[in-house]
Image 1 (cartoon, rainbow, N blue to C red):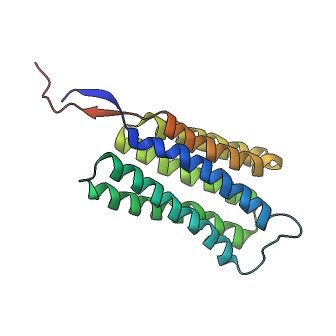
Image 2: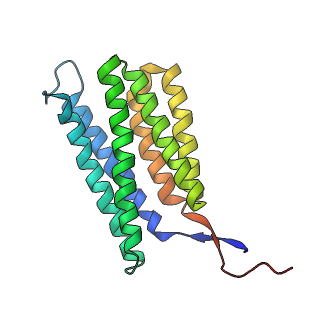
Length: 183
């Protein structure tokens, strides 16, 4: 079957997700960082904070998929599963690494490598250029964090937001036209 490039308008929601991430990241910096964090407590508070981001992520993704096709409840279920699993992995694995090793640089690099892998898988499954490029950007940034740990906090926040915005801007996917190839 021949394939054509088609814009997936539901991906536009990732622009909003990029902005929401930036707000949450800045909020994290204000609440949890520094020698005197404003919020202290058990480690699950930090994970719960990012779980709220995950819930907003699921809501934004579900809203954009249901708005584009109201009969596609499978897309909504897929959004919930992907939003939950990816957010849990991207936040949970680095939290475990940072909690056990106390190596924040390694945790941040693993965060970027995990989100990169998820983006590349999503991009490969949907033939979406935005996801593939965002995955590459996040992987490169993960390497930079390992070699330039002094700028890791700034780089992490900026590059994750930029990656989400890339997905929202580059919405082209390679889709099948449904017509068999003429021979």
